Image 1 (cartoon, rainbow, N blue to C red):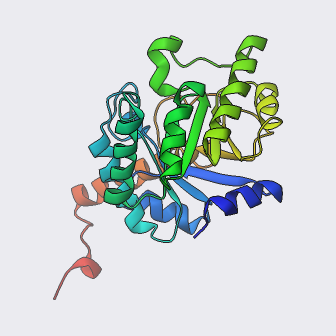
Image 2: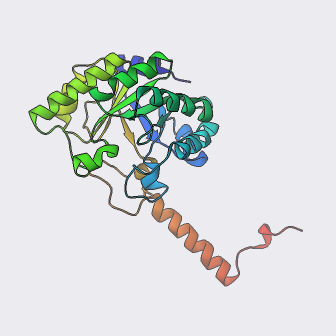
Image 3: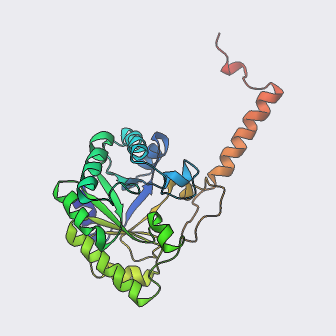
Length: 264
């Protein structure tokens, strides 16, 4: 299993890091077969699996439940669990308790937290306890009510300066990796140039140390139009719909089950 030092070495060796989300045993197993480097159980399960409008409503118990299922398929994989909204914002002490619960109850190898310099103290407390932390800055879905929706960050100089300061603070606090979401690649490059830990981009251009995509986006399973930064590497939704249509047709016309599907 890769560890935090391996991801830092990949950065030094200029080997891109590939991260994908997973929410269940099947998607986790597929990620493993594909040779993905690191798996994230994202709070995006709220919008993909649960059908909610945003990630704010997902609970700590739900994150632990899904991470436990994912980890059962990835016993020898580095799995990161998103800390959901209000599981780490109240106090560093509460955040540490909840991060500990995630690792103990789900088997995750690390946690991910959204926020910049303001959560650096909390990140420090968690990492000093031996819990690896992936940070997340730029567009932060848990902050959409403040940001006014899903908007690109870092288009003006003051925002870039803030993002760089956030990244530097998070590295000093002990985060071993930072996700950069929805920003011009020049902003991501400015961040990249000021820190030594790996950066993982999602809509942050070509200069990050790796990329992350939501599983269902990458394989083309969702029916809604994806964000600009998403590439569908397959159209599995159409394939699956057609398979179920064939199943329906064969049941209707009596050709399924056939002789080979019947016990004697």
